[in-house]
Figure 1: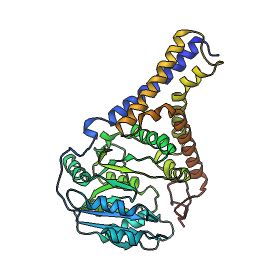
Figure 2: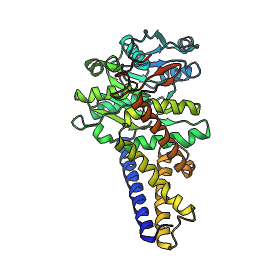
Figure 3: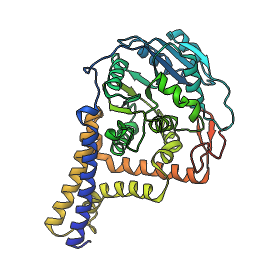
Figure 4: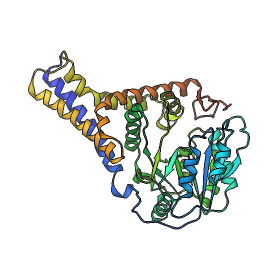
Amino acid sequence: MPAGPVALLLAAASLAAAGHSLARLARAGRRRHRLGPGDVAATARVSVVVPARDEAARIRGCVAAVLAQDVGPAEVVVVDDGSRDATAELAARAGARVVAAPPRPAGLAGKAVACAAGAAAARAGEWLAFVDADVRLAPQALSRLVAAATGSGASAASPLARPVAGSWWEELLLPELGLQVAERLDLDALADPARPGAFLSGQCLLVRRDAYDAVGGFAAVAGSLVEDVALARLLAAAGHALDVRLAPGLASVRMYQRPGDLWEGLARNLAEVWGSGACALGGQAARALLAALPWVALAVPRLRPDRTGPRAALLAAGLLHLATRAGGRLRAGADPRWALAYPVADAVLLAVYLDSARRHRSGRPVTWKGRAYPAGRGGWGARHPVR
């Protein structure tokens, strides 16, 4: 068992990690970073593009939610990306204009090509909104997002959607993934084009048409599987401000309906977005270890300190981690009770991240919706063509 000073040192390290997480989440959750149905609305002509591949089960709900916006979109274009089901037919029945994505040249990723085709077909709006088929927008979503972007002087904006869980493993993992993303984002820096950092969420991405065209749009980043972040970097490099808001009341998403889909989906892009170097991996591992350490030390008899002071310090660290995760879940519209299992969620997400980094370094492919995507150093598709 660790001596009292060692246990106190470990408790202090865990407390510091919990405080860091709490401070980052509190910064992301400031009022100016949130957006909801009660915020200011704006009227603008918005062309909505929905890239869709094998989305027959979800496309009608997505299109219906877009058409129900309080400020109706100028047009809704669904891009059928080689679907093997009735996606195109159901989208047309729901009221969208359907166009077919062109064949993908070697080295280009399917979603980026579909988004580029949709933007080329949708010319009616001064704003472009790219919405994934698994996203459900509240009726006030687009009008509030346009108002937020114009009010902050941003050329592009994204709402961070509330994850919808249909199974226990989604309840366990997806809110914790959202908290990790929120911890990493500096939303103030995103709004300042003079500061480093760029991020937009491709689940729902609003961009001014002239800014999109000026940087080449998705056609310019079609070699990347993280096309949303790649476009954000292009916009930021051109001096455009970005606006990302926490918006659980305006958008919801159910990304993965099977555990294997979650693993493959995250393995595609975590290393590209978060990095695959030793520092990035070590930081994520340290975060998970320090968060679990108090409970492990208190639960394992051989590790449990004999003295009351070190035990109390470990308990305080564990409770601060627990309160931070539960509060973050509550703010995001998720069930806070699942925070009790946060060490398990951290371990699973760390394993996915390590697998993503391994694939990224080795070029081992991942599969998604019937397509294989090799990973390689220097960015997805930089050296290995997407087939």
